[in-house]
Length: 303
Image (cartoon, rainbow, N blue to C red; front, side, top):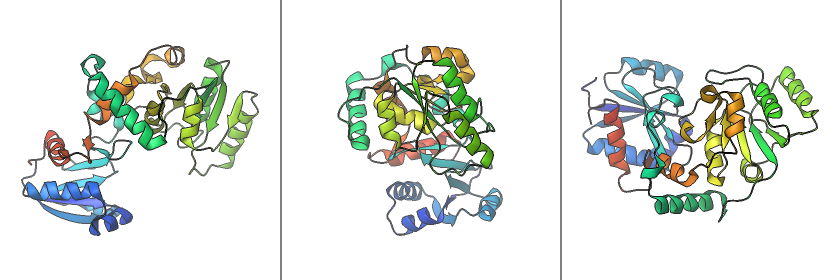
């Protein structure tokens, strides 16, 4: 591991501008903490050329929302909900530090967890209490529809068909990725899917949909985690760092995942608290800087 006391932080153009203007709270904490620990911090635009050259740099590299490409690089990104962040050496969420930890709800402070969960649900969604779902299931699509990406257990269209097959009664609300541009073949596949009498395809906002369904089916961990705000269980067709409280088809099989998703009682508040407050960096807390340095040390940086 490097003995250099220089760290380069690689940022996209918009974020770099905010940091230079002093308008990015978290990276302000990052820079202050690292310089206080004796490091010299350089800011660098994250062009492909600069990211590639980082492997030859003698110091450490901190990438923003990019998988680390060498053993002196770490990735920093939001832990689904800001101001919670994590720093990781792994390229895939399934290999993040928190993914390998055991979640034991018996060891979590119940009142503190409920207070935390209620606070963030109200702050992020305006809901004072957990809304009741309906006889609907949300299938949230992510990425290409007819080819399974790395880590996905099925194509997105297959995922929707499996939902129809294993849940023969509920209405299936299919939400394509809002920013996606689909091929003619993918559009045709969506149109064919929409012919099913129980299928509704919509681009409605995510939160109102999460409030109106009994559970979620997706390969997008961010959608599954968002559903925890509303106590919505999820069937996952992809690997995730928040797998502990979800039904993952790769682990238990498709049939078992659908069979168990609405049956099991799940400690949503305790998990939400454990995942965010106890296993990420809360940029709103006074100990954020020390938690950041601890995370860097965990991955071998000499801070």
